[in-house]
Length: 328
View (cartoon, one colour):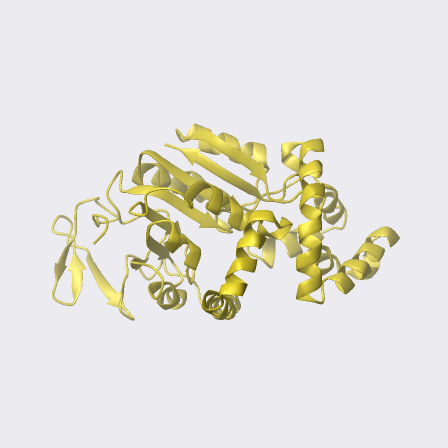
């Protein structure tokens, strides 16, 4: 085991026993489910349903694309260019810039790992945790270790990890659970360890303001359907990190008024007739430009300088999504 495993309830070190693990202190048992050690009770397990099916299909498609890229030197080169220079590569760039150079023996916790992300393996030894059991076999093919566990009671000893990472996870955490999760992240990070995240947020940019003008539209298409039940403004997010003892290293917008090609059409095509004429025009143009991958990627390369300008001219709360690095 790369990190000492502990009982989520009493924090005592757990030990293997035949085909499962158990806690010598409180007696709780931890079984293997589909070959993966599980720390969740039945009440804590992820509710299966339509969301789970969408996640499995999305991760399966993503895994197939990753394998295709990894087998091709040319595609790998193009993907590196995308990460370094493309507007759409921003969510991957925060991890590359922070973690690509340095000691590859570092221990990384991928929080809410889903099916795993292959590039994290280039940055160190990775342990993945996720409450969605069905996705973990994919991550198991990539990562050194994976566990069926949530973030509210991480089954690891204090000061275990050099990095904790997540992408598109913390916006799914309900408000009444956020402080519990942030305290756990701080607990399992080593002193000097860093939390690197792409976090979904609420925003004051033009698109979020427009979405909120139509009753129920924002709640349905930005919160309910994607499951973003914990969206908060970037200023509130920064305050939460600082309140839990983290020191800010980097705090940047993912997107602001300028959005990736296809994003606006994907959301505002819904309830189309309720939007003003200028929004309907943008949706039509964005939908046409977003049809072909090559066109999208070329536009994203051209858009990055404009996005940098947009970032500099707007407040931090315009950011719908934040790229953050905080240190313990």
